[in-house]
Image (cartoon, rainbow, N blue to C red):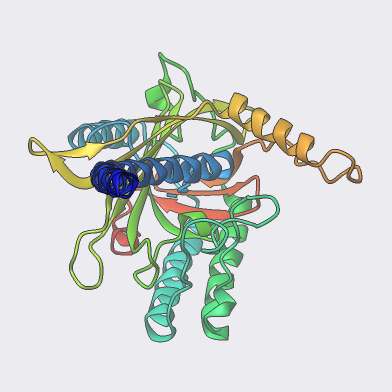
Length: 354
């Protein structure tokens, strides 16, 4: 009986301790689970931005917006617009002016057909159709996936852009880029807003998870800096998206008369959550050259023993300006994606800015 009582006593003691332990463990587990989820969410965002920034174009995404607060952007945009207007001396020829009108008509026609037939839905990452599965470079938007009419309309825009490339009034688009004294005279200086692109990472639509957005590209030629600004619009149901704005700051350097080399510096996502009346902003530094080489090194280690030529090369971000005047800019990226952008001084283009 004594041993039986002792066993019962030990059993009850074990039950009490186990119950208390489970209660404490459950509490700690919930806290740990919350912390793990928050950490995982942050790391996912960081990895996504890093992967996008390695291959992002100057208008992307690249995911995918500005180191400055919104008020600072307004001042910066106003400054660059004023500087560009003051240094305006690159009017297009009569032939180019006619083609510019045709370009706007073609873009307008494309928009109407997209309203009728639908838009290409692009979401973040490989699964979302934004990045290539092998190279992780931005995919090209397949407008023909919507309909033949939409595909033909998009091709018409590209054809006119190619024609304009032969009529650019500026022989050296990269002039004064990075010049602290004469940067305000640089042809590229100012705020450029998106009209059309074939790059998936710079394409946004209401029928996608990431939603619709307006994209602009602010060039500060004096500082040799480009800021991609993506302002996300409310969802179809009127609710606010998780991200209010995404800014990517890039160092820009003239590599030739028409080529601009890019080095991504940092990203600043601005959330739709507020603390003390201000939107929460995350600062994510992106040491692109070092980080890219590190990823390439790890990739080569993991692919050791495989056939030569399968290693991933270090990607080099750049774009070539193929047409530039006071109000229109057309460039091609290293991945052969086309960007058509305009300034607000081009009044006919304002209704078409994305």
